[in-house]
Length: 158
Image 1 (cartoon, rainbow, N blue to C red):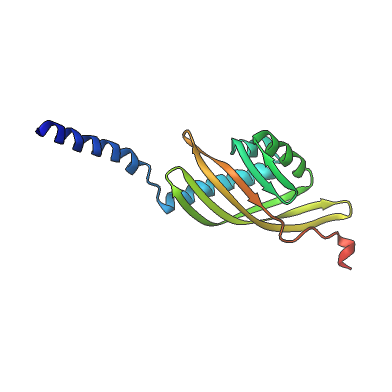
Image 2 (image 1 turned 45 degrees about the vertical axis):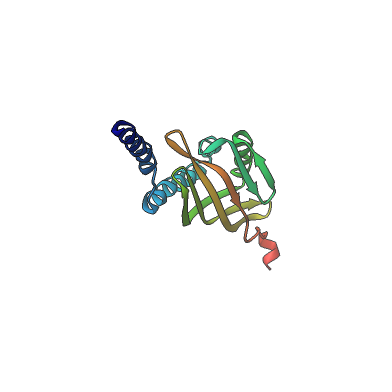
């Protein structure tokens, strides 16, 4: 009779240990996301769309002011086009929320410069990302951003 009880206790402890190991602290989650943000920003400064796209899951969804993109390949293609006119991209991490040990939600702000036919103009907005554990790395599964101040050509400011 003692053996089944002992086995049940050991099984419960064994199952609880991996769950406990997956617990993610707010500080750890913030470090993970800040690293992703820094990597994204650095790759954008180098205009490396492939390096940015590598931060996304294969089936990622990206919601942009121009529409919805499905899949890493579409994200990379869109980034390659965008990086032709966007520069000086800066990202600021604001909020981090742990959903579970394998999912982190984060929000922040972005700013940059858009090259228009009439010159460079500042632009900025907000972003939100759902990062998921993908093997031993973290990748964006859902990325949403807006443009809070649409670029205004210099001659329109007169």
